Amino acid sequence: MLPKILEWFGVLTAIAYSMLVASNTGNEVLGFALLFISAIAIAVWAFLCKHYGMLLLQFFYAAAGIVGVLRWL
Image 1: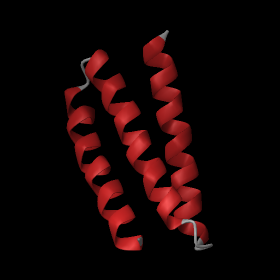
Image 2: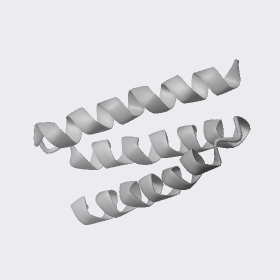
Image 3: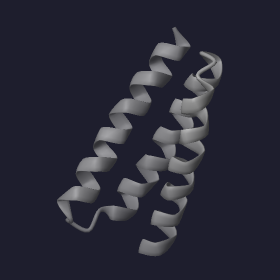
């Protein structure tokens, strides 16, 4: 049950991130924070389900979230 929750939580937060950043409404910091949260959730899901390629990708998404937040502050 936990893997499904992590998967869908990660997907939904990634969708919210994408919409916030694309909307160009001044919510970029929140959007990049959601990207980071999404990456962590999906990374845990990938680890639990042994999807190691996806796990590696999430490290880069998490890094992008951190860079995005720092650049917009």
